[in-house]
Length: 311
Image (cartoon, rainbow, N blue to C red; front, side):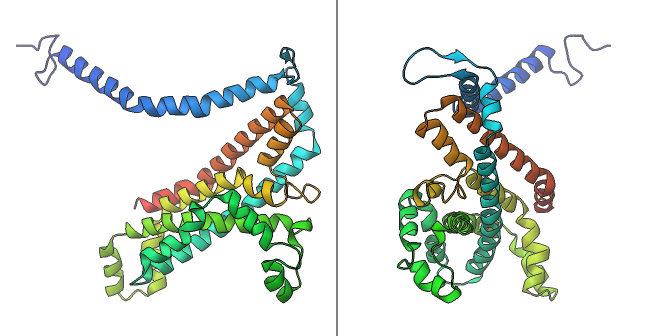
């Protein structure tokens, strides 16, 4: 006897299968709903608003908005200030992200290897990240105070390098040093979490096979840290590209614009000079820069490290 058209080969009615499939889809949408709402309100809507603001001239003194099209884009994109801010932002990222990643991994390996005091050292390194960066920037500005500050009194006297924040070639590295200090604790905690998830059986097997500490790290721990490394690099990069607090409080973009980043240029043009459309264009440039840099990272080494961690 042939099967009924209204019955599946497994014996279950086709209507029941469609109902179960529909319920699964509805359940998935319900579970993803809060995330999609959050993404739309805090990501998609602000990006769309920035695009609208960039296409209109919004006089704050009064009067209605006037459509200007791409005039604001041409004006801002052709400016020397934007090019300098973009270069400074990328240089700041190059100064901070590799240092945070490498130092975070080394410190995490050191803390992971000690038998006592792991919680204490983890807390010590995480405290800078938990502190208010604005307040800490003021402290660091005092430490970089010319001649009488702690940096000039110690490192400056030793290497003959002084007056960091007033030197156009030293100001950006000084601000980057504060960024490394602030982000380092977060990277340490991430790598400690990744090291805790490395199977101890693999390490014991490598030790029994005669592998030394370097070989155990390179062949067992490092491949398992692939996803953690990708996450740490991406988060550090996004934070570096959006740097604002340390620049605003330590140098105000100076000297001669040598520390002006995209975020500070956004504040300077959009808030200080009240150029709403110009500030919106810079925010779009910042968004595109973050997306492109993150995409390059994921395409260049992100997938390879993630696959190594999944072995």
